[in-house]
Length: 337
Ligand code: TRP
Image 1 (cartoon, rainbow, N blue to C red):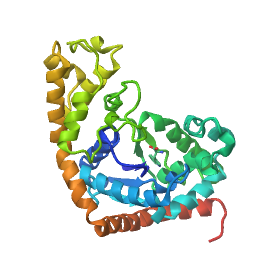
Image 2: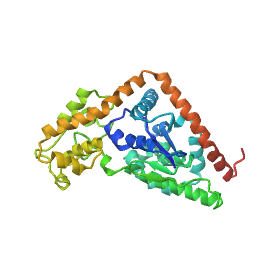
Image 3: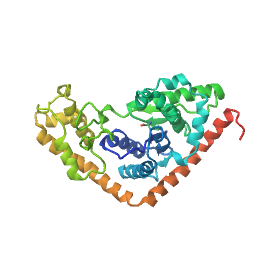
Image 4: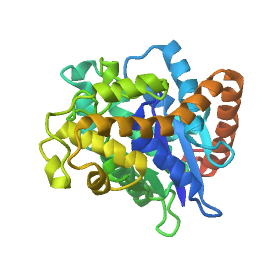
């Protein structure tokens, strides 16, 4: 198994990122068998596909590195790096641009969403974003790529690109690329805004009360849970009773994810209760889980030079791991090096 995944360094990490993605990465890392390998990277090259501020990007890259390590990504066991220090990502993207079809990219829903009304004004990078993402995983012969539901289409594109490249430029018994499998974490990990149970928890929501940040102190977390939107009914004892109650569903989902148990178990314990006592218990669980992470995060952030060293060391390992595949891709295309 070769597990590869990336995350964009845009702004700070929140509970949704942790329960939806990062915790899953840590578990994959911790469950690895001998000979398997995990590569996790900061997709800083992807971050320039949208308008961005260079100073913030730099800070966000180091901050996210600290956050990942604080959450349990161990740079001694996983290869932790940033794309910008591994030129092979950009090189392989160019090579794959010859294989990716305009029509395939035109069907990507993320491009349609992110380019919005003003498609003519979108960057070319936003359009070719999925080709870079394909390069990210194909470069390392990834077998498994843990991503959220929203990235599944990009992974399917990566498979299509790999297949067409192998087909057009490699012999059947010696393919250049491995077809990666997307692994989607359980739906329970979809964490929604605390102000609106139908919108994803997001760092771009203008209201800070809508999310729990990794940097929030215990009092802030408790206050945000206390003020989280709910409805007037007590909690149901069965899952069916949550339908049409997105805010109640979200809080129960968060509780279940933090306690690592099914939603039904939370309802069996709290069904019939009002939100007052339920929220108090939820806030306790939240602080138990996040306080140690937040403390490690703050300590790591104070040591910028060791964060830089972690990325430098991880990037060196990534460059070595990617080199044979990049070479094979150049050769397959008839490029003389
Ligand atoms: N596009 C992904 C996201 O926004 C981040 C990403 C970039 C990624 N490259 C990747 C994820 C490669 C998995 C594999 O979430």
